Image 1 (cartoon, one colour):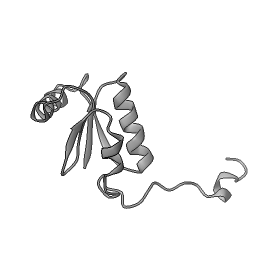
Image 2 (cartoon, helix red, strand yellow):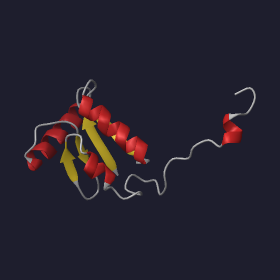
Image 3 (spheres, one colour):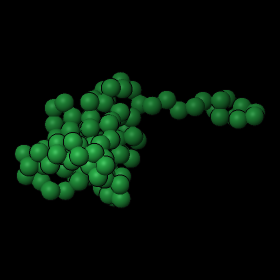
Amino acid sequence: MVVVYGRPGCGACFATKRALTARGVDFAWRDISADPAAARKAKEIAGRLGERSLPIVTTDRDAWAGFRKDRIGALPPDVGGRSRPAATPTREFAMSPGM
């Protein structure tokens, strides 16, 4: 499971969520500004990493801080629970009348 700890208005958090979504990785978002338990967990992980930047991203095998396109790109396809990229609508569906 991939967990992203961050807060609204954080550009690196937004970029990380966007990159994970584009890669088809399922992830859980933890808003540290609204969830004190998530804030404590993020602070604990950041301390272990020796980092102070957001977001904090954890997987079953790894953790890092900040927007790391290289780390996101290196994630195995099934890391977040999906075994393949998200499906896209077919041309027929997209062109259906009344949609």
